Structure formats: C-alpha cells, structure tokens
Length: 107
Image (tube, rainbow, N blue to C red; front, top):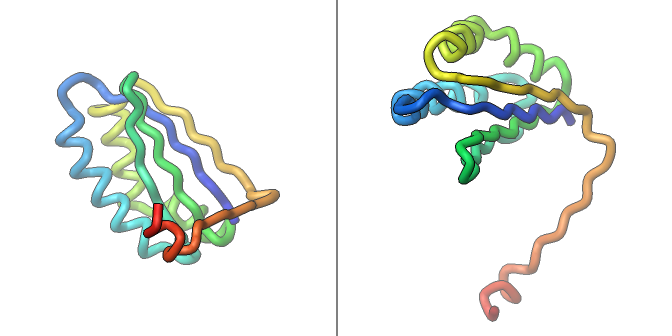
C-alpha cells in the first residue's frame, strides 16, 4: 500500500473556494487504479491534512501525474496555498481494531 500525506496551509479567505477544487480532486482520485481511500482533516491552527491510500505505486503515480490533478496543483500553488508538504510512504506494517457493532451499541 502507498500512503500519501499532504499537509497544507491556505491563504486567508479562500477555504470555501478551495474546498470546491479539493472535492473535485477527491472525485477524480476515486477513479484512479488502485485507489483505496481519501480523507481530509483541518487542525485548529489552520493546517489541512489529506491522507490518500493506493493499493500500489502505479495507482499513486497515475494520480500524481493525472493532467487535471497537475493543473489543480498549479492553480492551488498560485491561488490557495501559503505552504504545503507532501510525503509518499510505503506501508511496512498495519494493525487494526474494531469493536464489534453489537458491543459498540451497548456502550
């Protein structure tokens, strides 16, 4: 699995407009081969974090080089971001836990 962690900060007063672009990119990412998931988070200090998972490197590369995504990246650097940081990682280990639904309903 390939995990991309994308951290960014937006210029003042562009969040609403940026969200429209980000939503389109989320839709597009879902069409890439090997796509698993995409989640966005906003911290109290204004940092935005997106975590994108692909089953394999080829899918992540297809996403990274997609022409519409590349155009959105350029636009975002020019119009929306004050900074960003991208980390592309290969999953070495994974551990999961989920409380059974019946037990979760009783709490």
